[in-house]
Length: 60
Image (cartoon, rainbow, N blue to C red; front, side, top):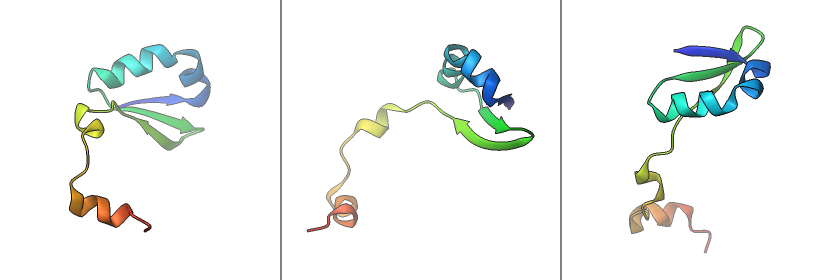
């Protein structure tokens, strides 16, 4: 797992995105405390949710 400071992440964002796309764990820390994990979005993220799952999100 690679850990980067916020400053490093801002400076090297394109590289960190590529690392995440390659399946590597990328963590961004404030000081010594990890606060964010950068991960790639899988193709499944864009697939429609099943009806039974959608009911949990429906406010109507």
